[in-house]
Amino acid sequence: MTQAKGKGDGRAAARRLVDLVQKEVDDGASSVEEIHKAIANLPLDVLERLDVFEETVKGVRKVQEARLGAIYDVIRKVNEEVGKLAKEILARPGAPKHAHGKGVHAHSR
Image (cartoon, rainbow, N blue to C red; front, side, top):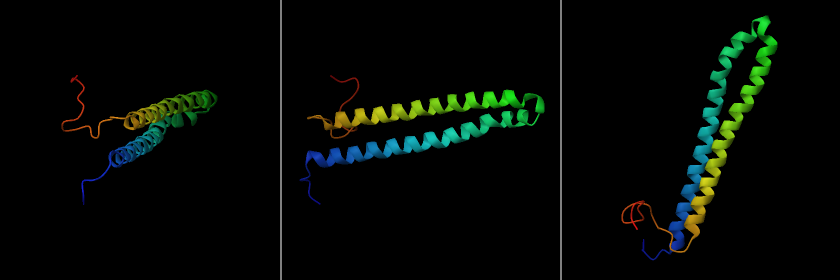
């Protein structure tokens, strides 16, 4: 292998890494959301079996589904926006080739 690779090669690899991380965060959020919903439904399932609370539980379940869905939608949206920002930074001329070693540090100027 030669070291004659252009700046674009490192940036392309970084963009692929951004895409991979975004996909994994989205998949993880979806998995956690399903688990969260299943656990949150356990007490409602028990209360629903009691005829006295059946209608109340239906309303609570609807609100709970909407709230949980909204929370995980925000997580996915933040993930999407962070990915866009990362790609914008990588597309800039003079963007750091890597984030370790002698690269850019948060406290350096």
